[in-house]
Length: 64
Length: 160
Image (cartoon, rainbow over all chains, first blue to last red; front, side):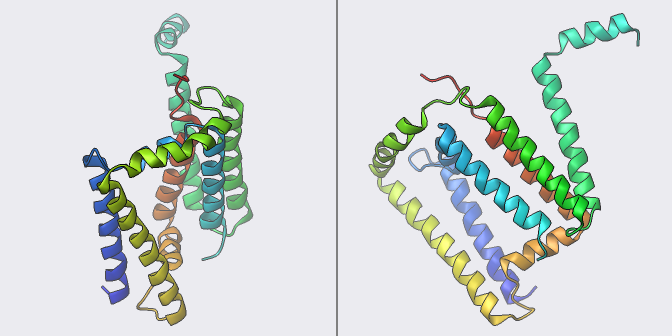
């Protein structure tokens, strides 16, 4: 495993730990709280969907 | 199975459940097809676009149904929501930690992009390696489609 891959792995573990803390600690907003807040309104939902569509088009149809 | 038995069976299963199962099967089929196709092939682009527009169409079809707030009140109340969360110190720490992670990801990605060493992959190359394999491509596409479907249709509650 290269140094670069290890750095990415460490960042992924850190992000995963933050997601876990958010899910377990009641006083810290979780990722789900943030997403649910965006989905409360039609405008927030449309913004999330636009980002989703752009990400999918970029990842699945463009050359890397 | 006789038609009478079939109609009794379908009568017992709610239409909503049937629609969910059909959507799941269609989504799995699309993910398998995308996994089998080449990334830059025209049918692949068409399929990805068709899936994206189907999900967006479903969101538009449902429209404002089940949204807890109007867009105007959501924008207006966002400051109150942030202030409510900010009332606690753990909130500030969590935000600071997330900002650090995002900055670190952007910084590492830019550094690796400038370095151009094969030993230090960029985020784009990691995703590219994953989507170059049919199974990885199919799984990632399935996850993307499921996430989009949930964002389009999920978390719709009546306004309090």
